Amino acid sequence: MSKSLKLGLCQIPVSKDKTRNLQMARAAVKEAVLAGSQLVALPEMFNCPYDNKYFAQYAEEFPQGETLQMLSHLARAESVYLVGGSLPEREANRLYNSCFIFGPQGELLARHRKVHLFDIDIPGGISFRESDTLTPGDQITTFNTPFCRVGVAICYDIRFPELTRLMALQGIKLLILPAAFNMTTGPAHWELTMRARALDNQIYVAAVSPARDERASYVAYGHTMVADPWGNVIAQSAEKPQVLTVDIDLARLADIRAQLPLLKHRRADIY
Ligand SMILES: O=C(O)CCC(=O)C(=O)O
Image (cartoon, rainbow, N blue to C red; front, side, top):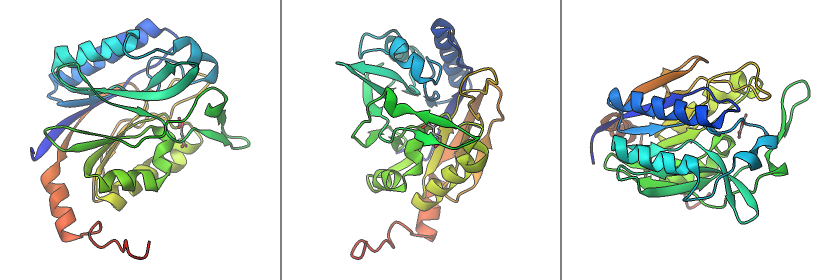
């Protein structure tokens, strides 16, 4: 296993124009690779506005969907590990919020279907009910790379510490979270939640948001970021489109785990 990897996080604008969304994704991934990224990630619902009324219209089936073909070809052409944000996935009569992960040969490595659907109602803030249109997944998702084992969850999934803990126990060192917090929960909880999961599990947490669009029905917070295993934020965008490239130092992770062995000190006999 390598001691480090360069991660590329693509905070792209997402609009109603699917063709443009795919162009933006392609250009951002290429820019990240040009900057040396070996693993690149896109945001939640990057091919589709984050709004229940669009999910069915933009949904795709694996493997023939246009976005899925694009991701696979791009991973192969750029010879990169590609965490394909998320998109509405159709299987039979159901829709899922799904992330497809492709390897450098364009092969499918894993698929994560969002496990926790975002159903909230904050008066004067934000209301959203993913369960009006989507079905939850029921799997924990991790995959291997030459750098380390990597976990994938989607947005609201990060609020459930048990999920990240199970991935940490399966050996992940890096969690990628395609996400789209909003202007109510983003300022309050985005950074805190990513830092908490990173610190608890002594892993890197990389959360990738769409760029903010004040005219959208759902306004994404932006602030794509990486928290390290010490709980520090080591990189963060503002709200505008940006490709963030970040060095992930796995030797530092090993040092932190050796010095403060939290995972070893768990009392699995009492909880
Ligand atoms: O947890 C949050 O505050 C935001 C979650 C969300 O926007 C999502 O799951 O898509």
